[in-house]
Amino acid sequence: MIAVAHPASQLPRAGPLPNSLQLTSDGRLQHLLTVEGLSRDLLSEILDTAESFANMNEKAVKKVPLLRGKTIVNLFFEASTRTRTTFELAAKRLSADVLNINVSTSSAVKGESLLDTLRNLEAMNVDMFVVRHQQSGAAHFMARHVEPGISVLNAGDGRHGHPTQALLDMFTIRRHKGDFTRLKIAIVGDILHSRVARSQIHALNILQAGEVRVVAPYSLLPAHVEDLGVHVYHNLEQGLRDVDVVIMLRLQRERMEHAHLPSEHEYFQLFGLTQRRLHLAKPDCLVMHPGPANRGVEIDSAVADGAQSVILQQVTYGIAVRMAVMSMVMGVRGA
Amino acid sequence: MPEIAPLLDSMAEQARRHFRQQGIAEPIVVGIHSGGVWIADALRQRLGYTRPMGKLDISFYRDDFSRIGMHPQVRPSELPEELDDEHILLVDDVLFTGRTIRAALNELFDYGRPASVTLAVLVERDGRELPVEAAIVGAHLELGAGEQVKLRGPDPLRLERIHLEGGT
Image (cartoon, rainbow over the protein chains, first blue to last red):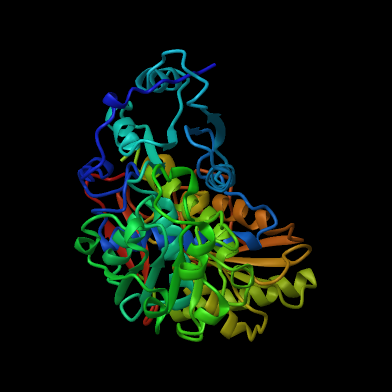
């Protein structure tokens, strides 16, 4: 029904995106577009609310009536299974009605613009958009143009950000480690293409993490990455030493436009997380990965499935964190 | 405002009598955050109950969510074991409109199907908007329009009368 073409000219270029758009005048969350600019209090409030939802799994009926009668549209211009399904489950556990729209950008070129798509869906009286798009700034664009009272959640935009992923990672770390100020955290791998890494670094800075390291070959690091307040390592053994948490990133093979790497095999030799390398970190170091993991490329299967891995917990907590964000933005409407 | 301790003594006595008549040895006590948990705790001590206590935060079940939004501090609900076929003593501080109790009942039933639910409140005041009645009551209060009563605590517990600007 809805085909979308979205001329790049319609969207802002990557770069600093305004964060004021996502807060109401009294500082409450009305959209979630980026982690940047969230206060420590607001970020903690999201994690606290998620904590309550995480405990809901003990209930016979894993649902609360908070968003009964609300309609949430998952608008995905990019393939995703985990993110879309956890957003969908989160919405359903809040008793909302969910509509999933997967837009295949390559085939659907009937000439409808993103704005027209938006207007058509608004005409169906929806309350919230969850949007994933290959262009940085797509969620901001939508938030700027939706009718008042409709919320937009960014489920990943280009290389810019993936705020709910970063929040669920913070939630996972907090559940296991508590206070962030004493933690050393290493983010390893394809930082260049990773919107997840960008959002994580911002979130860790806001939560005043003790030390944030990025570990990657030169060709997979963005220019001026030090400006984000991280320590840069080009050697995995050095970067892993004494860390409390290691976050492995997926090697984004589909985004490699140029030859960033000689071969995946060589990448694994130098930057793959193996049990032997993991021993360099603290003995209780958490192993995280936003998924889907390329086994044998950035992470060894034995580590991904090992005792220190919390990769599947990240998926479970993703539902609670998304429920928290959805209920908080919807709760602002009447205020 | 009345002193709390005599009200709690009276509530404990009413509960003892109530559950004896019903032939129930020890119900599961469930308090509603925050005031209800304090009262539930005090009642359990007076009654010598030993089963773990439940705590409910009804924020996710409120009927005014779309008007006032998410309470900034939602605490996790904790309920012990299985609720199926259990007798529940549900405890709150003030019974006013009855909407909190409606929400609490909805939440309880998402955990299981209790055999019975008995409501105990420290203060019952005028202003019911739903057919909700407490079996165990510490004190009855008639308050003027624009007046509210609030339990402060946890240590010491005391009741406070609040005058709202312009009434409700």
